[in-house]
Image (cartoon, rainbow, N blue to C red; front, side):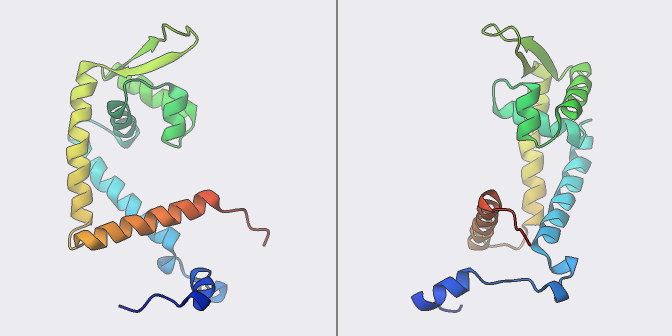
Length: 169
């Protein structure tokens, strides 16, 4: 393992340019690799959850709802990074399956909350086990330290994305 940079080298070290436009290939791009990993995890989770008659468009909001008491279409769409119209269609299908219900808020009649039915709660209880199994499979061979380091790297990338200013290049 190499020693950390000396303070005089720190600025250059932490502001390194990791990509050269003339040598950029997708297979070496962090964004490309993250997208491929996420796509693979989603495909594997979909295959497992389809055995329980759940699609990606259904199990993701179902899992989110199982973690909170209520939500609205707008909050679910925002949290799951989808548009409200798509979320409404998914929720319609889930309601038809008896997994959730729409309930008007007693505090504000304009607000319609989405709540899980007992059947939806049972279905939601299966999701963490399946997702854990899939994610443990893709992390096979990683030590605990490597796993924690990977989490730290991904969090740092996410923080960089959240604070990044648009380039004017």
